[in-house]
Image (cartoon, rainbow, N blue to C red):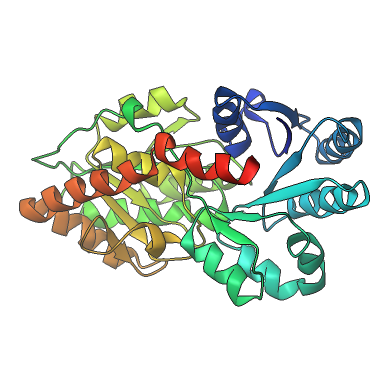
Length: 335
């Protein structure tokens, strides 16, 4: 069976790999033939490339997979899904971004055209599945994001040091300045505390965060974009993972931290409480609550039994999202 996968395939331009490059490869390994669009850096050229690919492969593919986001990239999904309808090709939106529920509210007619006519809508989190069902869509299936668990070396951290790790693209919705503020508060009690921030710039927030840290007199290690293997190696030198986002769905970086044995502290937003359970496999704090996140770090540093419990539970939980298990759900809707 052949598939056309539409999404932002931009890692060669310095961006993080997205689902199109990970799920697509997995599907190829399961025997599917997969065509891709697009790796064009320009937004208009990507749109044209995707549209042309729908037309070009219309007689060869059984399904079109469409990475579907809430922001500007939503228009790829809208245009290409409607083109697929005209050409009578089944399409499957893969739902990304914790802000998609707002798109449902703000553009109900457009969303109805895209999602109601889909073969299936794949929600990687219970959060988005619930949001879409509440909006009246009945063709939604939950297939979680997956990782290859065997690639993640679990490290049980019995003694924590105040070395924080943040891994995300630098964008305002991920609130990177909050991490700097947490470090500032933490250093009041642990002057040797450190923060490493990993990821490429998305909207100018990288320089803004650097300038902000400098204005506070705080030293932060900005590593830039790293390969997965590089940040996994970096993770072994850190002891606490913090996630400061304003909106979220099911962030793979958080899943990977859980697999590696890093205790996770996250803002309790969007799909996060569908992935993380407070006091069981992570610690959750209110959005943008710097003091609460700092106190959560202090709690982990000073409470060894809690730390061990969270780390062990997190690894057990994330093993359920191994590709070997998740792939069965994909095979079932594509064959």
